[in-house]
Image 1: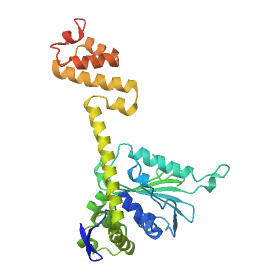
Image 2: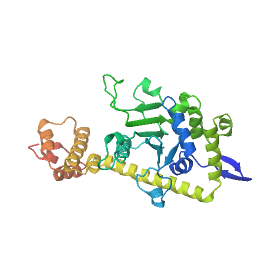
Image 3: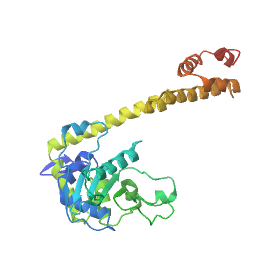
Image 4: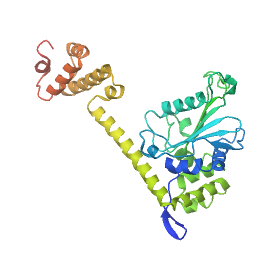
Length: 319
């Protein structure tokens, strides 16, 4: 991962780090135009864009759940949300659709006609496999979603909302995208491999590679990229630890939903599995007791199961 830059050996920054990604594309509208066009070659070409969020606030580098995306608007009024994701999160799809819908809604001021609304177009680059349920899904790496009828998908309700997804690792494995899109895949997956990047011919990708080298020579950029990576790791680690702890205690649903009913359900499920494992199939009377029990009763039984020698000892003869 080392390359010579201005006579010194520096570590090349990862373009998939969303701080680096935003520095590259929010700082160069021409690169953003090329990325939009090259990843959607079958659609009308974009001539130019205005970057709507060119700066990065210090608070964004460590903000919980914040994604450093690039917002752009073309001359036709269409707006683009371009972002990089390196790790799948449980709420990824809901968050993506929420922000895309909000991007659409923000275009219209009070009193304006709906005809004034341009499309809200998401271009999300994912460094993980998202769709893997079937062989057909595993064989496709680029996706485009719009509002269409499920029986007649050629019938769409306009194109105001559009979400484009590229699964980078899958696209790289399948060699699924011809140049110029394929050169972007090589850039994001093999930026540190000189032998691979030497084969890239697409000028915008070569320009992006030059920008990576220049940015990598900036000590402050190195520091901020590292801080961003560390902040994301700490955030994801803390979320993962909380989820694992909740699962171990049988409280995950209650913890996530914050609802008493969820907490009771998780406790009951955990206790039922523990009882079955220790004492075998549960009598109907015990199952009924569990269904009717409060959270406090379930917690008390969970504590006592470690020392109880039988169901009768735990629940009483009536059990």
